[in-house]
Length: 110
Length: 111
Image (cartoon, rainbow over all chains, first blue to last red; front, side, top):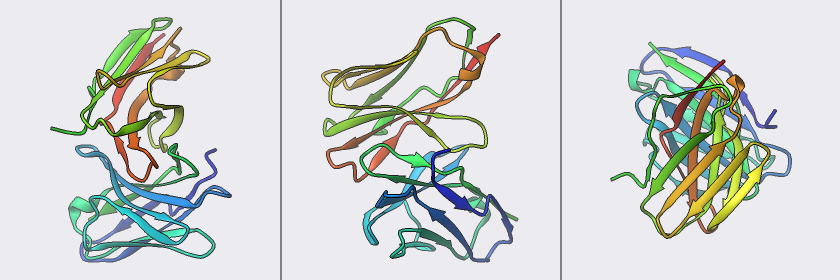
């Protein structure tokens, strides 16, 4: 068990809808990272937060946004969903460079 | 050209074999090098974490970093069927603000 909790495990929704994915980092970890993993793209970095502030941005679409709250949990909001957004979304937390990943949220857009 | 290149495999070996997994990279600023193991339907699990060049050993796993060649390796000794998974290399610059992952190599260890 990595100590990183992600909810929900599975999400099925329709195109055009909006969803929120939630992540609770390991106790004491200040950094939270969001990744998207699809079969053809591998693990793609989306965004990082450190102690409530955005620290780095990767290939995150404008339709996607994230935030980290004072209790350090984080949410990833995906809106105007498209079929191509179907993927596994992972959250990771860290103290240093080594990431500890949750088991992901599998998003299916129909 | 991708910053990190990793052969996706699949790589199939018999039980007990020594497995060699490799990645090459182009960014000479990378200082932190990691290997992750990912089982199906699970999140990646941190296996090895090294800083700069050199070797690191942990049980049956050995990680090697050659910064002069921009090449990293993970060796698995006495491979077991339970080692069957996807192995991802990852690396980041000093400070670790942005980590780049390889595509992952699928490994099958046959009993």
